[in-house]
Image 1 (cartoon, rainbow, N blue to C red):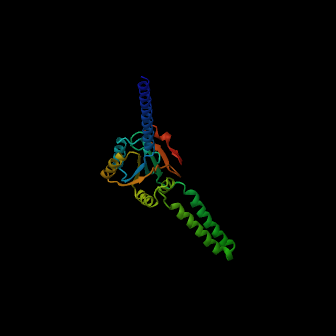
Image 2 (cartoon, helix red, strand yellow):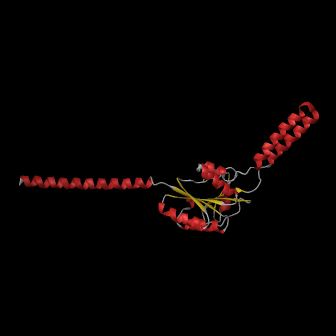
Image 3 (tube, rainbow, N blue to C red):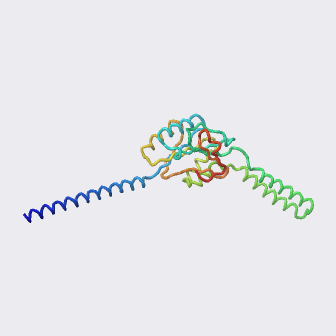
Length: 239
C-alpha cells in the first residue's frame, strides 16, 4: 500500500510539473511571437507619378488597401501652398511653393554690391575697377544661388533617402511629377501597392526601412480634410 501510495504521489507530482512546463513553453512562444512582430522590417514604396487624375486615383487606392493616414505622404508643388487637395481625409501631404518668394533679400544685396562697386569706381578710380569686379562676382554668386531650384532635395536629405535614388526623384519632381511615400510592415501589401503604382503610370521603388518625409525649409505640411488649412505649418519639423 505504501509503495502504491508513493507511486501515485510521484505520478501526480510529475503531471503537475508537466503542466507547468507546458504553460512556460506556451508563454515563451507567445513572447517569441510578439518579439518577431516587433522586429518585422518596415518597407517604403516610393512612387513617382504624374500630377493629375492618376495621382488622386493612386492615393485613394493605396488608402483603400488599409494603409493608414500616417503611413502615406505625398510631396507636390503648388503656386498656392494653401490650396486644398482632393485626397482621402487625413492623408499627409507636403507642398513645396512653386514661386520666387524670398528672393528680395539676395537680389537686394546683389544690386547693393554693384552700386557700391560703381561708387568706388567714381570716387577712387585706382581701386575702383578691381573692387567693382569683385562686387559683380559676389552679386553673380548671390543671384545664381537665389534662382537655383532645390525642389524636394532638402526633404529627401532630411529623411536620409538613398542618395542615388533621391537625385533621380528630385529630378522627376522638378519636371512636374509628384512623389508618393507609402510605408508598411505587411509584406502582403507590397505587391498590390506596386500594381497600383504601375496601373497609374508611376515609376516605383521599394526601399527597406521607413522613409517618412517632413516639411522643411519653406515646405508646408497639410492633412487632407475640411480643416486642413488650419493644420498647415510653415517650415514644420515634425508630423
